[in-house]
Length: 387
Image (tube, rainbow, N blue to C red; front, side):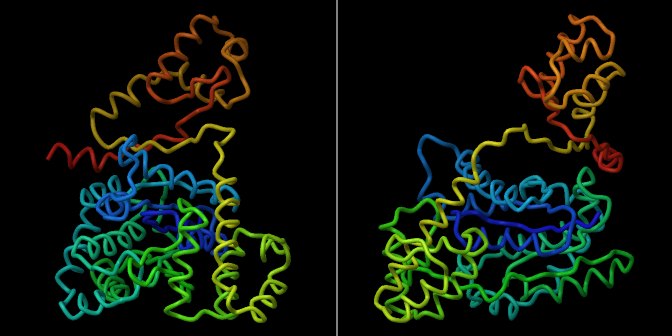
């Protein structure tokens, strides 16, 4: 199975993040692993500034993650969501990626850091050592995906989808891994490039799905005042919005039309370009919101057992009957139907339903779904835990 690995840092849900995700469908892979840089998001002042006081950090982040998942489902991509806060400690429990990480850090010079600090990329304008660590670790997670997430992969990622920020360190990291671990297969690197960024020239904030039409209009107008956008700028943006907006649904003064017709209006009325961009961004955001509706089916995940406690919780209690019940929990059968199919008493199945729900393995629906797709026991990790 060819797997693509990529990461996102949804400080806010912008069209840059959505376009990044949409690039996955053109990579010729069977599955995508999307790693959410939650630790990076939590430390970013823009995320902190827009925090809803009624939610904690994780709840706030999950709003954006649900939107991303809606886009992934619309692309008909088999995907798994992981989080950097989970992948990071897993990586450092493994000898090979830990050694590579240390070797890369010892090879990065202040000249590299200075070059990175001046690299134009939203949310990376103030470069810190922690961000450099994230960039290095991210590629190592992709390269050693089968070690960091053995429940999701049996080999390194075939493709590493990343933004321009990786170019500064990419050659150094790849070269070091090839030298110290020549048997590892490095992922092919695919860059999301030539992207039309629209940002407020003062705050560097991009339009996002959380904003109103007025807020987006203000940002676009400020950007236009400093860059003087024209019809070609609009064309570049439409290429990106075309990930979501279908032809014939672009807007000019509230009327739907084909992209070329809107571009023609923009060429004749350059003073209206900012307004055209703003209304089409809002339409783009509305379409994305419609994709983020709750799933009809419960989400399944892979479970990694890497210590004795999780083994006692997830593996030891499973007997032959529980496994048989789990195999039939596909969302189509009730407890009565499962009991009949297995030829066991209904009270017995009902008791086991309760235990499996307590273990977090099936949903609470009348016709339950499995919440665990597979269980992987990391014997190497358990061995290191005892040392």
